[in-house]
Amino acid sequence: MSRGLKEHKVIKQNKELRCGFTTGSCAAAAAKGAAAALLLGTQESNVSLLTPAGIRLFLPLEDFRVSDNSVSCCVTKDAGDDPDVTDGIHIYAEVKKIPSPGIFIEGGEGIGRITRKGLFLPVGEAAINPVPREMITDAVREVLDRSDYEGGLSVTVRTPEGGETAKKTFNPRLGIEGGISILGTTGIVEPMSEAAMVKSIEAEMRILLAEGNGYLLVTPGNYGADYVKTHCGISGDNILKCSNFVGDTIDMAVNLKARGILFVSHIGKFIKLAGGIMNTHSREADCRAELMAAAAVRNGAGLKTVKKILQIKTTEEGISFLESEGILERTMEDVLERIGENLSRRAYDRLLTGAVVFSGGHGFLGQTKHTDLLWQKLKETE
Image 1 (cartoon, rainbow, N blue to C red):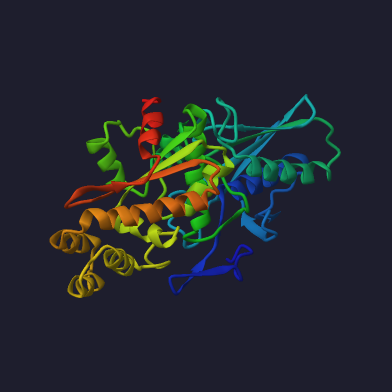
Image 2 (cartoon, rainbow, N blue to C red):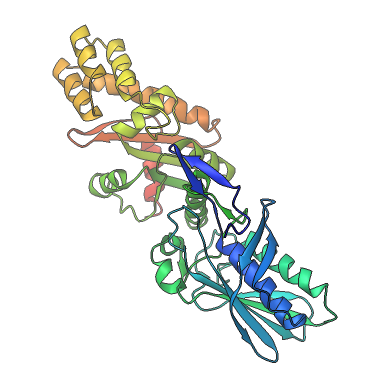
């Protein structure tokens, strides 16, 4: 069954991938089906749901449970071809009549609770994000408007698999405890979506800024995080991992009014920034050898060394060639100066930016200006 998504596919890495639907769509569809059974007496096998993306879904309803005052049913999450850990879980919605007018949404079994400031919801609230809340409300109101019922309704969203599934998500890092989040801004899951990854980075950034002093410590991944913990005199408990999304991370920091951001990265990632490349994934650009060779030429490398650098497989090899020529230090100063300029340019000078670059074999290679001040500010929150 296409569920309304037959024509909606994406191409990623030369493969055609099937789209899916979010937990928010599941919850809204289940709520609509339960409301229809409660108020109209109809137990449909599937329900029509218009998503914020403008795509109309037709989602199967399962496991109706009916009492005098309430009805619940569920929708099984289908993430399409996305490697989503919530794929296949069951999202239930129970709709219950209450005396107070209005539609009230709550989280039940398997839905996480907010425990840290900085997210889109207050501490203590169920982790049902704003757009899914709107989707649920709209879906239930559509049924309510077709009925003669004049009271209020409560909608409780739950998922039996939520507690275990949440352990495989970002929720523990975000301070969302006890279950999964009900998510989705479009209602549709796009496989291998970079936008979804960036949203996860933004969510963690919001928390760190809410709990800190406005300064962020960022690394692309585990190499940088391990280097910070081992060499930088800071615990690293509040490190934000940005993956390849350096430019997007700076943009979000500016938008959230951060005061400063310090990156710590292996040279293999960050030498690309010397050329103004702000997405460091190899499929976006892989000019590490060319940028290192150009910096080496500017600092006195001979033709033989430059040719060797242009043939390297790893930046570690290039570092060794620079060291053998006696120009490693000044070449890295050149590279770091350009990295610093490009970071500042991306931030439009609206926040303080800095970078520390290291290699596995040679350790610390250099840093941009402002780095000492940024370290000082970051250590104030330790």
